[in-house]
Image 1 (cartoon, one colour):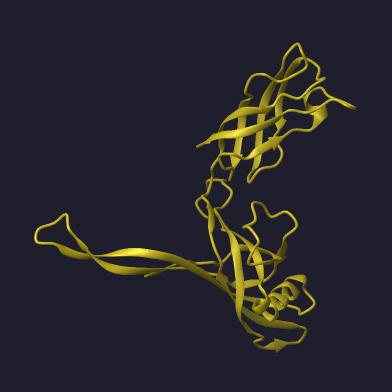
Image 2: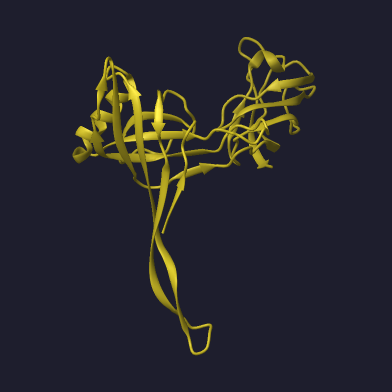
Length: 244
């Protein structure tokens, strides 16, 4: 059983890792792979036939026992590109546990203005084909075979509600409008934040812009100055409680 997510227009970011690495939760310091011509994410599943005792006299049906995935990619880039080095070294060192962390972002074609869905994971580089060279540009093909969990963030996922994680201290009491929320898995969220008379935040912020691609449990920060703080004051932090 297999399925494919067609990849034209996707953005792929990678980083050197090992089979012990965890999947990336943001682009962060990952390196973009430029000039992709192919990068379909292919999912596979294994199944076994079992007897369904809920029916009379009993029927067999397939039950999925495991799920895997691979990412065959083809790019037109110069061998001096950083992405090539990461992929080639991961291929050469795969027997020693080398792998790559990857972050694959989809294009959005529905006019919604959303950020695209994201797949992230850790994969070993199981094949390398140097392809053809034309002038200074080479066509290179790699196959990334998933190792462990594949993480998926659906398109959209704006923040619906936040909770106060740490209250901060020393802040100037006031309501601060449209404060930019920093960190987490997503981007683009803002909120109105009220600092109480004691210089701390005790009530959950009011979401103004929910942003996109957040997940429940993301811990978000704000710039100290944006909530009336300076010097040794401490900015509050918030946790994403729900997304919509």
